[in-house]
Image (tube, rainbow, N blue to C red; front, side, top):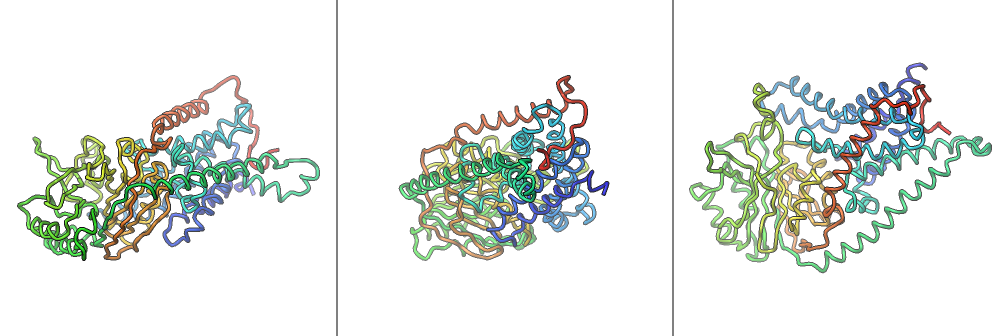
Length: 537
């Protein structure tokens, strides 16, 4: 029984429950349920630990356990599309899992350390919720950021809960989730002890009140917000689009001898039965082999397509910048019906070890984990693409999972968000599903509809309240027409206007809580007060 008293099982079970929500086979209705249950188990387990050091180790082990299945698609990607041996690939990804687990460790260690303060025994759930939000912000920034596996994204299947992300951002939903989990487990624990109710011991009145408020307030706001934004979407100008999902396997895209074949596939899917019926055709990331120019064989195919369709074309291609030495950008171009470049966007947030090697002078021995055409240079400015219908907020690949990038595009005037990506790297794993799942909160935060266009799927259209209007199957060669994509104007959300202040306060609060946890003070109780979890009175 000694090891059970020292190492609670709940954080590990909670981590597994959370991880189960990130598999594409999980029913959509079950994902938010798993999110709340996982939070309840996590909060109960950490609440039972009275040693900060033990809490740190438990948090790290549970966090690492969470990321192993969530990022299980990465080793196969590395092995398939690089020269890295399988054991080395698994070792590298396990190191990434362990690094991400350190954020969980830091959270658990800090929360238990703060319980030494006189206010800590009752305030730790609130402090923990605030710290969880702050560490999410830190994780999305440090070492170029990797906010993948954010547990609050599982809540998007409950649109009546997540709408207030337009006030404080999607990361704030993580803090709400921990508080809801703590209140649920406290009510459940006290409810199992009817005798305590009769004696007036450990009554969960406060937890019940908190639970009611945590669900009632978001429900009321969500009903109001959905009505408001849906009404605005029906009144605004709309855009008629066709999205092209050619489903080209990555090994085929990497074969120069087959480049013309797979390029023709995209062209064939783009031809309209009624020319002029569609205003914009959207291709995925990297849809042009090597680079776009009139001296290429595919330029003639594009001329024929544009002459027939009489529509604008948005496509991904490399852009060579004439510098000394020359650099190449992962870019998106908007072409008019005459095949003139209207505007372009260079990807600003590159994939580390996929599109460039961070700290290349130090990590000179590390080749890119995923082989591409060459090392890319980041764009110098995040800006919407100017179009005849106003600014379009185009994002490339995993840029769509970063809240700050979407917010800045909408602040710059973007009326519509468009994510173009090549998720063929994921194969048939849950990676493509997870990419779209994380993107859905960006729509709620900014109240802009989104077109999510993926080479191999899943492609989708998202409404301003985060709901899926439609989506395509994975690895289906298809083209989808949508004649009423809303081009939202004005109406900037609180998050878009003041999200920078929320981020700043998150950083300040996180650093302050870490300082309180590590700073010795005469006001801190030096003796152990025991756990402050569900069992505390």
